[in-house]
Image (cartoon, rainbow, N blue to C red; front, top):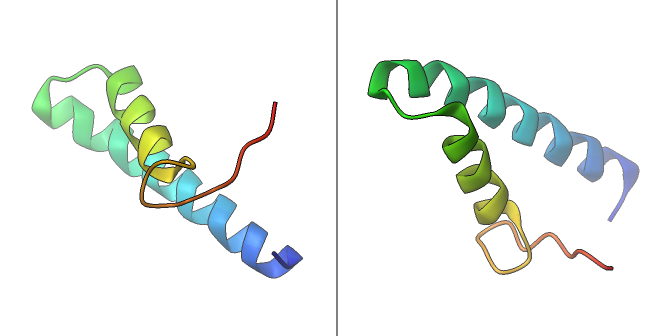
Length: 54
């Protein structure tokens, strides 16, 4: 992955995190639940397919 693609991906995840915090106030759901959901979707088993190593 190139530097530009990594920065774009990091920016997109940051925007999703900010949007989810605004959205959670309207739904009455804790922000942590939405952050975890975004992380699970972006992870190696989710839609984002971001590889993680131990």
